[in-house]
Image 1 (cartoon, rainbow, N blue to C red):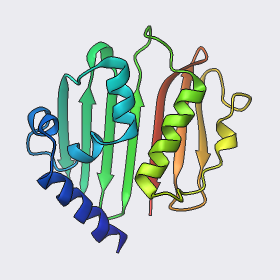
Image 2 (image 1 turned 45 degrees about the horizontal axis):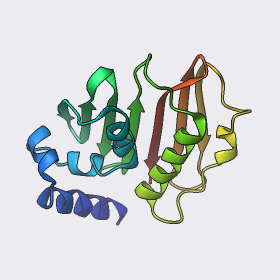
Image 3 (image 1 turned 180 degrees about the vertical axis):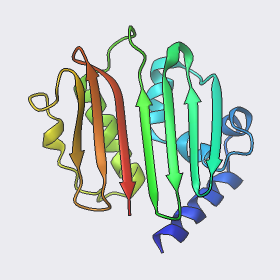
Image 4 (image 1 turned 90 degrees about the horizontal axis):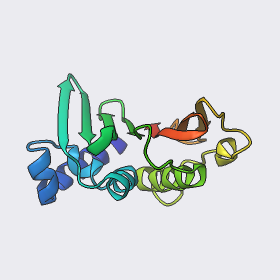
Length: 167
C-alpha cells in the first residue's frame, strides 16, 4: 500500500510539476518531490537558484543530483519497489557554516515532510551538540520505517546532512 501511495504522489507531482523543475530537470519524475523538500529549500536559501540537474535510472533505482553555485548539491535517491528514499544536502567548504541547530531543524522538517506529522520517532538527542563529532558522521535512527538522520561535520562545521527511510 505504501508503495502505491509513493507512486501516486510521484505521478501527481509530475502532473503539477513547477516550472522550475520542468526547466531544470525536464522529464524527471522525482525532481518535483526533491524540489519541494526542506533540504532543497535550505540550499536555495543559502546558495540561490540551482545551476544543474542530472538524473540517472538503473532498474528500479532513480538518482537525482541538483547542483548549486559553489559546489552545494542535493542528492535524492528512490527505489519505489523496496520503498526506499534517501536525500542528502552537501555544503561546500569555505561558505558560511551551517550551525548544528539549523541542521537538526532542517532534518526534523525533512522527517515530517517524508513521513507525515507523527514522523518516525528519530532519537534526536543523538544529534545534540555533545554527541555530534567535530569530524565525521553522526547518525540517529528512528523507531519506524528504518528512518535515519545523519549529520557530517568537518572541523566542527556541518558539511552534509541527510535523511533516509525504508518502509
